[in-house]
Length: 425
Ligand code: IMP
Image (tube, rainbow, N blue to C red; front, top):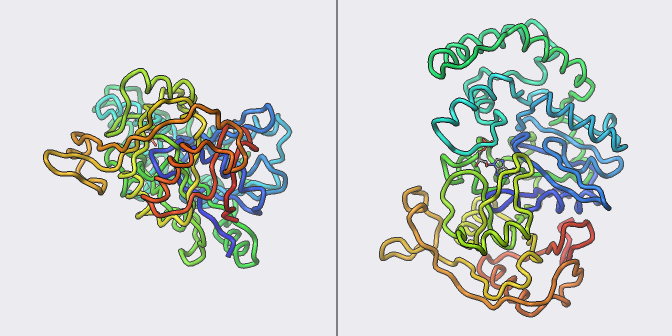
């Protein structure tokens, strides 16, 4: 079964977009299964840079079927803008994009509520309404893609939801109320423009798999931001781990045959929350500048730190990775001494497993193994043998500790700056 799931193994921004783009060459279908426009996948094709938030990056290839699965929360206004930008660049969309009927929609009141709640709670969200939209989904109040085709249902849902939301906006947050009629008209208009893409995507995907097509499931964010397995409450609101591909697309776990963990050669995190290996001095700033570590969606500076094998061990376990991809190795070129975190010290204890307690995670100190860096540039290297010896040692330590093969190493932003040791497809 040629199905592969691509997952971020850290706190997101591992460079999944480039890997998905690379593997799409061999795929017929690319499926997004969770998250929404909080994600930002950057892909560089020739001299053109594309930042995609909702549409799978497979769309940049000719004749690939791109699916937004039921697990995604979709902002229709944002999607329409993305479609328009891509069409203006000559990308074919209309015959290649499908959106699940059961995809939940981000409504203006989700964004309004999140703006207010972030003032108090400070998770450091992207303020795209992701959390409130998933809240409505679980509370069974959500508006779904299919509702755009049934005006009465849509109107009733918006009215019922706004009764509660406007009460909160006015009485709890002292903020302006929203108008149900305006939102209804705006979403009917979105429905008109998007209806041609609405489909039974679970059927499409399963038929594709059953007929031997190659299907790639493209994760967003990272495993340590998973709502169940991440650093709760400093997480996103969806299951970012591999299991999310099954529920978020309507595919059985027995139909998935490889799960690739994408690992940045160091670690970054954007937003609040514990980050044991964060580098708070000028080296952190150096990595941020060199690695272009600024959020693709919000432009916020990303916090930078050393590679953390404790977090990765957890990620390996909850995902069941069958192979790894290491990205941005070239950003470490020229750093004298490199550190890799192999354990956490908490009081007198050394922890080898990622703690579930936020209190421990916030107050532990990393135990590092120090490795000599390399002076040579690895940028654009395509052959593993040509990597500096110390870079190979750095990679070997990752493989040995995690006991998973590194299949691909990315050595730059461009499509062809890549070492393929073993293709997952
Ligand atoms: P939300 O997903 O907007 O609710 O934000 C929750 C947390 O996830 C915040 O810390 C965000 O910075 C983080 N987050 C959301 N999307 C991404 C992403 O694509 N990359 C990295 N962090 C993200």
